Amino acid sequence: MIAAANQAGPAVVLSFVISGLACTFAALSYAELASSIGGCGSAYAYEYVTFGELIAWLIGWTSLSLFLYFIYGYKNSNLNR
Image (cartoon, rainbow, N blue to C red; front, side, top):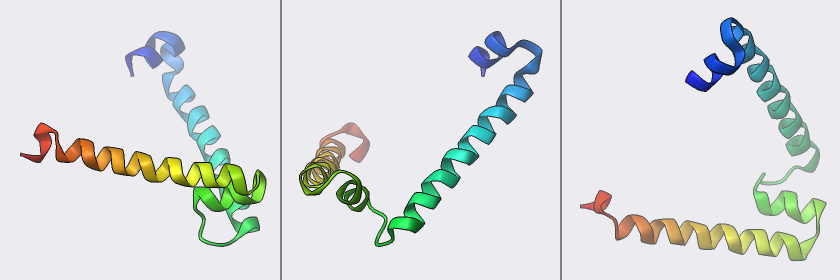
């Protein structure tokens, strides 16, 4: 919020409205893509349709390894105690 106030000055509310509109358009684009492809809507499905099987396979295994990494990190952290 401080960076926004320093950069936008008194028009900070207007800058938040403009960024909200940009986020809305990005969400609508993502929704259009999801409805045109169909299926489960996972990152694997989108990568499979757009880039092919190899890239989708890499994205799928990367997602799984990140999930397991974060589970392991949480299990061994002080937050779990």
